[in-house]
Image (tube, rainbow, N blue to C red; front, side, top):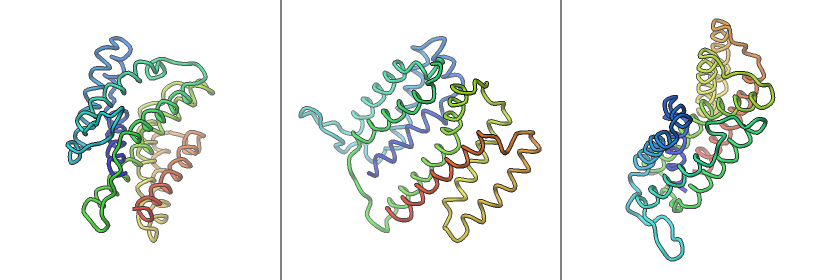
Length: 239
């Protein structure tokens, strides 16, 4: 499972953190260039995140074995192909944008799980600490960035609102990121820090004139708490 978490981090970095406005615009105006740049970023993220495992055998298909490098090239091609097919990535699909987003993410992440070799780090090792850190980073990107995209697509489908303003977007992302990081701390202090963080960001929301009690922020808070609970289970009880 260790390689899967590395792959997931690379996927989230390429699809969210480093999926810039430039790439998004190019996917619309010049799909070949946009997909090529995005594919290159995706491949680089995969290589960097999976560097220690590139030379080992990952999976076998029809009697043919693929090592890490070969699998990464295959994953990059499949990701570019899925982005080309998934029109909701850069065009509105009225009423089902959020559903399409979730479905394609599930498909792409499932492919990563299928090709990843099953390796478990030894207990009390540096590899285990690195794995826990990577799992925490995965949850952070999902909480801060992926939820922003999902909530926006949901509101586009059912409430028909525009993309959130700069202040609303980034204040909400910072709020969820801090709340998530607070909740993955050791249980003795996690909830105290989380409550302090919520209080501080309540003030920031008021200063920026963003509605703290909006349905978007409430739903984001609930989902962030659920993600933090899942990550806590993994880093404190599974690994």
